[in-house]
Image 1 (spheres, one colour):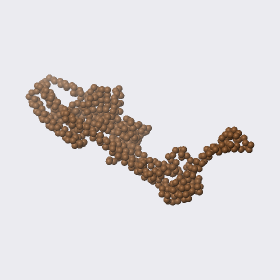
Image 2: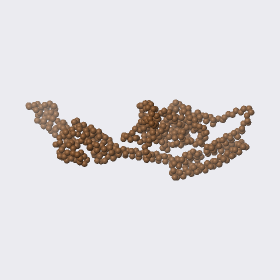
Image 3: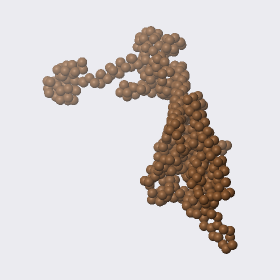
Image 4: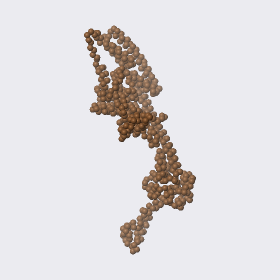
Length: 567
């Protein structure tokens, strides 16, 4: 089992666990002071959309290392365990992409729907779908999901770490890139245009626009213009005679063929060979060059067929052996160099490989969840064992200090004992549960107010004062229900075994029986009506008024009725 994840958390969300408002913590202590003042009345959370646990975070300031977010410790003081995978400065990039794209669209009076999709169970944040009324964009921030170039209506936008096949660059003319640069506590979106044999050009999002072709940058517009128009050549007086059109086309096709072989693009090589076969009017040296180039290209294609056949054979063997790492590696290579003109058998093999990879990813995710659950169970069990040790210590402390401690101190220890027993759960023994129940009764904890109500002098009074309410001649006649001291014997300190030092002060339980009887007798007397509480049947005087007897006393019939009511 792996140890606790101690990677530093650099991103959070504001306001709540389900918030979509990201922010990044400054790395330097001098910047963190200003950050705290700026967000003084806001809260930071390990957001669910960050793959976090949904609990609140705090900021940690350091002068000897980078500052970072941290979870609040658990109730037992131990660090909180969070299964969040992405914790670095880029872990909230999908939220920054949505925020920047939404603002960009609002400025252009456009609307779109956003979704953080998770195909094949990949972690949240790898892919962001932006859907418009007529199309959309799929932003791949990492390599977890391979881009689909044939999916209608979703133009891929690739993160800087996502590879792209050279055939794709040649066939599509260009691809879109995206990167996020840190600016203070936020991330700024940049859109790039990558084309074959050209460096990637980067632009701010405001320099981009949506066209019928999809997302467009200034570089895209230049590439489209260069592909859509022919260069105009002005021939002056005395210049050489213009080359025949067939010869010019042949030279262009020879260059395309050489470039396609150099980048190992079977698809483009086959397409250029078809264009050469359709070319007419070529003679002499140019025709010889074409024939030689075609012969070399056909031999190269035959060799690529062998390589492709071996690649699919290796993929089938890896599938049969259920070698997940090898299947993943070969599938990526197949998608890179053999993505066109697949046979039915090749399609079946790649589909089976993709399903196997997805299955392995799901099994790995389940393994991680089970591992985290086991780690949490071990943590909870260790916490319960520590609480059980605390229960044992508190019971011993209460027993040792029984004679000299005040009721206030005793109640404080009993409350702590109750909390420790709750955390210990099943680790508390039956004997300990019985002792805890006795101490809760003595401390008036856990009983309804009506049952725990007692006369004012007894509440909060020291134990010696309770003893003074009952003379020794009364309680010594009773057996102690706690230490089992028989009538005529004093209580002993070790109540569990009935042994130990003899105490002059009786246990609370021994005198509580007598006090309870006295309270019951007093309550019955308070409830019994006196003679003047009822009307007189002789003289008719109502309750509260004296009788009209010759001697001024109460009539006999009134007194007898009052006695009957008290029975």
